Amino acid sequence: MSTQDRLIESTRELLWERGYVGTSPKAIQERAGAGQGSMYHHFKGKPDLALAAITRTAEELRGAAERALGGAGSAYERIAAYLTRERDVLRGCPVGRLTMDPDVVADDRLRAPVDETLGWLRGRLAQIVQEGLDQGEFPPGLDPDETAALLVATVQGGYVLARSSGSPEAFDTAVRGALALLRPHA
Image (cartoon, rainbow, N blue to C red; front, top):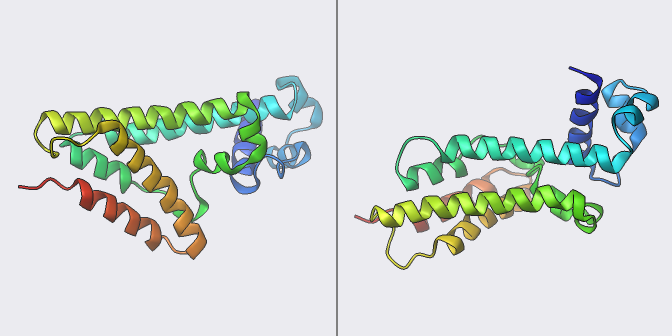
């Protein structure tokens, strides 16, 4: 792995663990095994490095979501695959957690990949809900955009419930509840 990649990966991990303020250039350099000169050779400063890390994290989240959502099966099965995919629930969402970081939210450049990713996810889920409506899988009148927002809120809220209780069961309960609402009725 190149020095630049080690810096980005170290920043990704530290942002997930500590947030933006808690991620110092020194901690990044130590974790990456890179010197200050290397960091500033590849990036103008901490904000540019954080942007690269957040962008990479967002791209990975999109890829993982698309693997579940773009797979085989009915609309319900693909949504269920997304909601039940393997996650480190007690660590929280590496993208969603950034919305709780005031320094990320206050910076338009740092917030943009977070907003774009969650917007993409809502749009992708809405497409699948619409497919389910078109196939008669879901009840008529179900709004795809509202349902997609509910599903994203279930995942993000599930992380909060799990972290606050110290148990992944809280996340799993939220997912089961959302799936029960969508379950096709014969």
